[in-house]
Image 1 (cartoon, rainbow, N blue to C red):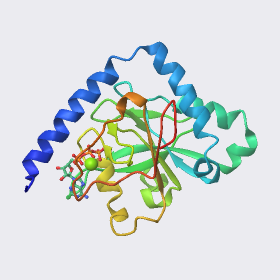
Image 2 (cartoon, rainbow, N blue to C red; image 1 turned 90 degrees about the vertical axis):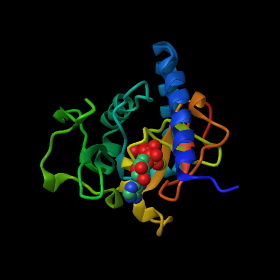
Image 3 (cartoon, helix red, strand yellow; image 1 turned 30 degrees about the horizontal axis):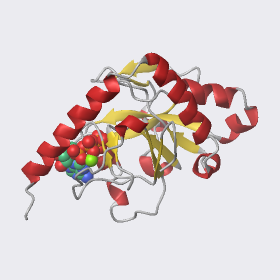
Image 4 (tube, rainbow, N blue to C red; image 1 turned 30 degrees about the vertical axis):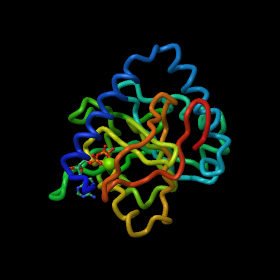
Length: 207
Ligand SMILES: Nc1ncnc2c1ncn2[C@@H]1O[C@H](COP(=O)(O)OP(=O)(O)OP(=O)(O)O)[C@@H](O)[C@H]1O
Ligand SMILES: [Mg+2]
């Protein structure tokens, strides 16, 4: 059977709708507890311990919220604060579509909202990093599979930013999805541009 592009796009869209509404129905109490569990697991992972330049994301629509935990962790471990820097995505426009660069995030950072209302570091162009300068990207996702396939919000932002991974899959940054267990789906249709994850960390396990 030949599966058309339209069919895949419609299937992705239905999976997104279902998983987004599942996540929006989670209680604040569950999410707070699970964020702590995800964080506790994350800091034991070799890929996290080895990484110096680490990107994470600001929680949107009930995504796991790790930034406060990560900032507090670095501040209370001065030896790590010297070694590790935390970055947040900054949405950029280009002729070939939107992609992400990354701005330093500290307890003192100033922010401005992007067009989705998501805070981004308010910094000068020269101090932004490109994805290939990071060691690790902790990525938000709408859905994932046990084979570490990822479906995002549908903008193609992460896929475009990481398109160099299609030809150089083993180069940095290491890619880790951060999600709740309820975002796992049996099978997600994959298109040629979709970048797979190296791992996914949830409140119960590392895939
Ligand atoms: N490398 C790329 N070059 C050009 N267009 C791309 C690229 N990657 C993705 N796109 C386009 O982006 C759109 C959305 O892609 P997709 O459905 O995979 O989004 P997503 O993975 O859910 O989003 P995100 O990457 O922001 O998490 C598609 O129309 C796709 O063609
Ligand atoms: Mg994709």
